[in-house]
Amino acid sequence: MDESSRKKAYLYLVSLVAAVGGFLFGYDLSVISGALPFLKTHFALDAAGEGWATSSAILGSIIGPVVGIWLADAVGRRKTLAVAAICFMASAIGTALPQSLEQFIFWRIVGGVGVGLAAATSPMYIAEIAPAHMRGRLVTVNQLAIVIGINLAVVASYLLSFGGHWRWMFASEVLPILMLLIGLFFVPESPRWLAVRKRNDDALDVLNRINGKEQAERELGEIRDELQKESGSFAELFQPGIRLALLIGIVIMIFSQVNGVNMMLLYGPTILVKAGIGTASQAIFFTIFLNLVILACTIVAFILVRKFERCQILITGVIVMALGHVAMSATFFMTGSPFLNLGAMFVAAGAFTLSLAPLSWVIVSEIFPNQIRGKAVSMVCCILYASSFLCARYFPMITSWFENRMGHPGGAYLIFAVICLSCALFTWRVVPETKGLTLEQISQFWLKQSGKKRKK
Image (cartoon, rainbow, N blue to C red; front, top):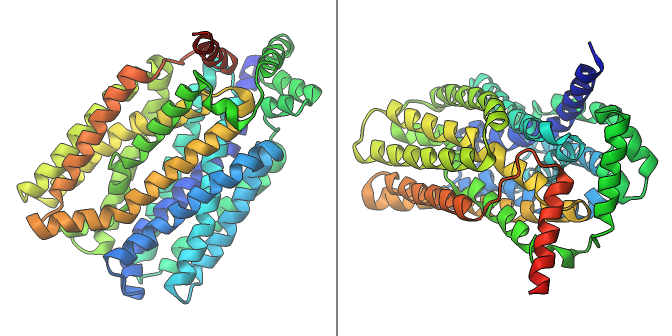
């Protein structure tokens, strides 16, 4: 193996360790979908209780980035991931042993804190350690880990559904949590965070292992030059130019949560049971195929991110998502086979996984200047999970409203189709292309925009 291949292998190994945080993010938020039919019976949940049981982890996910605003900058990206792993561990044990719904919700919120920390920190860490030409692919590793986590959560839920072992569905998360904690002992800290903390020798050492001596010295010089132009304060987030970057990050992340596909995945077994596909175990079984499609599309996304521009992929993907929602709505209006519902899910979820799912994280992890990246990403993630919480909390009530008036939830998916088309329009009009640019070049773009607007 030559020097270049060794450096790439090292980068992928480091990214894989960080991406275990993404794996836990996917596993923790998805395991509830398989457990939900049994939780409804065990705790006698109505529609509001069902919404609380499902959305409680997302409520905790709002708290995670609030803590992360301080934590990621104060102690570093690696230690923040360790704190996330500890939250996951406490939640895995706590949700396996609750005696009441209140206890269950409390421990789901604790796990949600871990989700919020991991979701904000993992892609940011990978983006900060990756060379420009590999950044899109390596951040997509985090998305792949999320999808693998979702898939394994569904498989575990299916296997444990026989006999209704919902407690073991949550306890099964312990093993990957231990893997993350052990792996974090062997990966370096982010070189950009080290440079911000004026630990330039340590930053240069990490960059040497990634890029080689000559490139490392040049890159550290660019990082230090940029840091001199930034204050790192919250006020900087709202300066002209950077303010637009913040708006883009917030809007893209809101679209990534309220587009309806996440609700298809989160409530997948429940939707299929209502469509008439069979028992809870059978519905969980068919969602395994849905998640295999998502896994395949995530692997294809590696190729797309490398060959095409970010905005091209994003616009095309969300338009296809809109078509998937229209098809989903049509299956309810025409009262066809429940397998048509599953097919519509395949279209919408596949398009989401090829476009908005990975690229929302790629864009947010790379769009902000170094000094304020931790604060900006954490703030964006707070809003992301607030919108996700509201969507998960009220999705059963929205579909119930349509069911009471139309006899089916088809109207809800037409709303999601309109949301997807709005995302395509926003991307076309507002989002800049960042493919192939270093983090410092992207930062300079926003800082120049800020300077131009101040002069005017």
